[in-house]
Length: 85
Picture: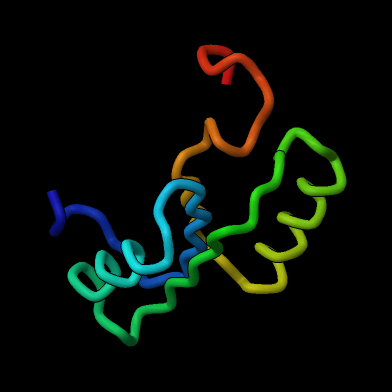
């Protein structure tokens, strides 16, 4: 499978709403080479359903040149019923 698709490295933004800084640092050191372009946002609670917050997030993504954004977990950043998320 991995020889079939052409891939290239890109910038990653992880928005983590569950783990604390120590847990993230421990996981990061175990999984990722220090030279990879991965940034974390933690301890910044917000609701993506708020239009101003969504616009701010879009701006951060564009300015940072991120290719991938990971939400951990998505249910923590919206105020909708979980099964409707």
